[in-house]
Image (cartoon, rainbow, N blue to C red; front, side, top):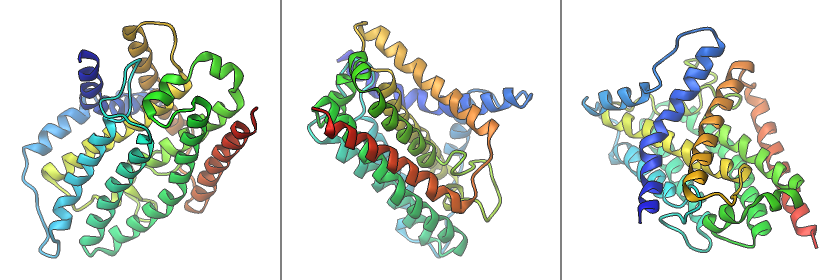
Length: 304
């Protein structure tokens, strides 16, 4: 029971800290002091104590978008295990539910943006669904390759079944699946080189433009949901790269947490050393992720 509670509470408590690590890494590499590590916690607290403003042109869809999106992401976090323990919600085929929950959150974010009647937010919504149509196949095919390697259809069994012996026997397949998931991680979380979370240029905004009209608690739900989504996708990637070992639960949990924050540092380094891709190049990057996942699953299927 204690392990299950830890698996539930850690994403809820530590997810906003990942963005703090990313921003602090970028500040250090740029020679700046940067924001406090806990800046997102302060922002969430401030937004929750403010009122929300709604346009008279919006309907219940606009108000429901942030709440449904956050609920879907929190449910998705219960499917992903952390350390050598079962996820709070696990069953055969739960990886499909995970994909549907992430899609549900995106769907309500998109229709909430469209409900404003703004051509600007409609542009961002169009870009979001276009890129997600390429990111989702790469994500599902990568999970399919891992499922075939471990002969399991549950994320708990997949991530728990990956060992160093699996890496020794199937290093090329796992490396390609991990590369695809890293690209999907950057795309799904609106990070460079796919999107720039700090931009205010109309022609380059994707995710940020869809949430411009949200304020107060609604915007807090969106920011918090985005951080938990980053945790969910990062936990899958980290546990695929750092498979289960013979260490105990506490050691395995410490390794997973260290891997999560190392991933945040890596994202900060990526955003510091390269620029955002041109919009027409983003689909090519996502197609490359699909190719990595396809090659991984083909090699896995060809294994005796």
